[in-house]
Length: 236
Length: 250
Ligand code: SF4
Ligand code: SF4
Ligand code: FES
Image (cartoon, rainbow over all chains, first blue to last red; front, side, top):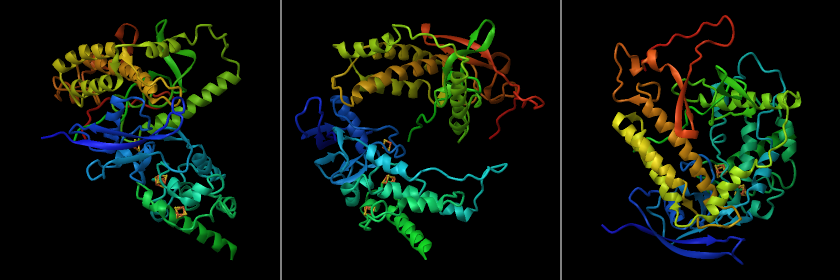
């Protein structure tokens, strides 16, 4: 049986060597155990170690190998090689500054995430044991807490591209709702105040690119809708 | 389907407040002033010979917090006499970098890494066999030597993952050696260390031989040698009874 191979077109840019970015054409032979796009990238790096990308867990949990794959954001480790249209075009996540090759500067993304205070706020003295929730209350957090902060959603969102410094973006807003929906959190009003602004929340026009991009099957648009509902409910 | 490594048991020995401890002057757990460890690299020794599900959160939340607090307290309290940084403090790290930069006719980081992973899987896997472990010890030594000759093509100063991966491989090799050498030497089954030649019997529940092997393994990078220290089975708070050793039945 002839060996499987993949034909790539990969965005390359090393500011230390290259005047400007270029697309590299390269074909790589696969071993039978290579199932995911990340396997092929690792094999590629074995041949040419200047090829740079982030990766860590190789199982969809750390969120570090997000990239633009054939025009769509996704995680290399969760993307099956079989069925990928060739040449496989790989680019860094759109809308964030490129540091090198497929590695982007995530500073702006994490700044927005931190701006929503992604932790439980409750100044009441802790009870003897843990702060409890009913199973129903806990259920509310499903589809919110699973976010791995890969940035596939925010970097597919036109509103985030235009205003990464002002619009919190889908990932940050999903996290904001995760704490707004948490019955143990006491900062609901402050959290809503923090988002009451023409940009931070309201730049979302429900284009739903984020839902389409999320490799964990989460729905930031719905969470954003729920925050908007809470704003309205609070105003009346 | 194959099993994969998900967690590293054992690590730099610490006490419950994050101090790194070493055997010294007859005390197996003497703190090293100003040296702390927490998380998966550390071993506060709460897990016994097999960490159970979600218990790694202890390393993170309990001992991470403790180590952080201890470090701050001791620094602010002036308990740590700060000595001047030796002039050659960076030499070791710089030598590692310089070696990588100048290596020619070297080994591929990817290939050596693959061989290390394959050898660990084959020779120190879920079930362990004496002959395989013995072979593994010499294999991992060979691989460690190759890791000392790795070469990188990428010399860029911007986000150089090739260099980082080469340095990581050096670190992984240390852990691989510690695992293989310790496992080969321990002639019993205990926790996650399951040897085919130490089965579950009435005399040795779960294959455990407490008379000989109820002790911690200490591996020294220098000389790739082993030492042992006693296990503390007594709770630190007074009045709490120790939990007796028992057979694992699930
Ligand atoms: S739904 Fe909102 S957050 Fe999601 S992509 Fe569209 S504008 Fe961005
Ligand atoms: S919501 Fe989904 S796409 Fe967005 S950061 Fe979280 S896991 Fe990634
Ligand atoms: S490598 Fe961790 S999510 Fe892909």
